[in-house]
Image (tube, rainbow, N blue to C red; front, side, top):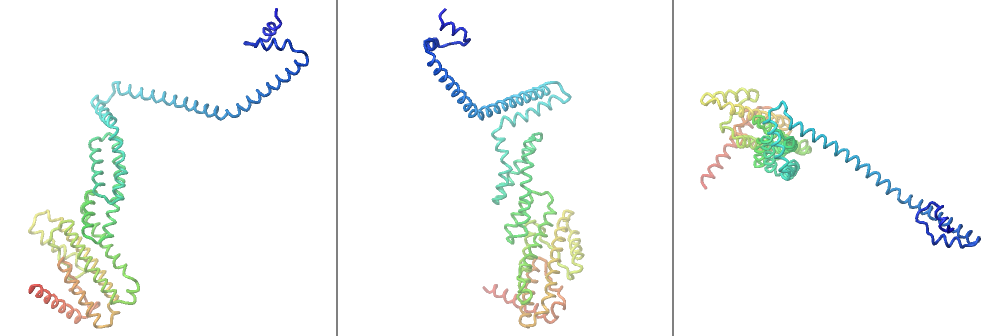
Amino acid sequence: MDLTQYIADRSGVEDVDIGYLKTVVRMSGPELTTQNTLLETRIKDLQSFEQSAAVESLPHFVTAADKLANIRDLAQELKTASSECLEMSLAVLRPSEHPYNAIKALLANEMLVYSQINRVQELMALPEYVKDCVMDGDFNKALDVAGVAARLHVRYPQSQLVLQIQNEVNRSMEGLKVTLYRSLRETSKLSILTKAVGHLRKLTSDNAQLEQDFIEARWLFIQDQWQAIPESTKTGQPYTYLKRVIEIHREQVFAVISAVNTVFKFDKTTSNVSRSVGDLEEKTMETNAKTNTNVNTNTNTNTRDNYNISQFTRKSILALFTMLKSQAPLIKNPSERTSLWLQLAFCSSSLGRVGADFWDLLDEEIMSKQEWYDARQNQQEMASRASRSILST
């Protein structure tokens, strides 16, 4: 047998390089030693290369192993979900205690939602759209969107998605209510007040409570206006301070009563302001009772409205008198006192057009009888001259 073939057979290695073995067989002893050293060096190089390659590839192996683990987990979740879906489908298809028509209606509603997935996505954006409208002050659009959400819930009462959308829209509308109620206290423009009340009427079904909240908010606004007068004016310039107080009272009380009659469309017959602050409520109710004798029972609303206005008028007059009693004695200049009482007389006369005349309620703690009489006479004379001047033109 050939020596080369013998060595190849004994090596137990497949695909032996016969040509290389023939070369080795012909080598001398020193050449074999050199060849052996060369082979050992190459083996070490290969081992070093394998180790470095293993170290560099380890993160890739780890990442691949993690991804394979995730794939196995997802496959298991998919298998579990498929099993649950199968059980749910079988539960629907099996005969149950519920009538078939109820199940059919439920499935029809759900299938309708899923078949309109694009529109569903638009509906899911409604709450954010409402928030944007409220922040931008576009209250009409916010109310329109809230109406759409409410109608959807009426049409699809069993849809959890529609219910969730309506709840989120309702939460946004609560923020709108807070903004509108705040505007009732912060603004003096009748147009803004009218719009705010109109929006609030769409958000609440208790119109009586809304009327009461409106009057209370306007009363707080008047108090804020009084408190905004500089403290230095109050302590050092009582004449200037009281003129500003009377001006605010005339403008704002007149505006509030006019706004109530306009915004809430009350009966234009207002209750007469009592001649005594102490019995203002009683006389107001008596006046309304007399009015009700000639009208039907629907005038109960007017009675309530007149009562609310009378309460507001009473509070404002009491507050005005308190400030007059504390500051008027500090004014010693006769001309300033005359000018102040004349302004007060015009204020009372102006408010008399809306049933809030308070001139007869003034007592000597505020001004003397002579000052009271002179101021009224001067006011009536000036008003008469103004009327004749207007008629002559």
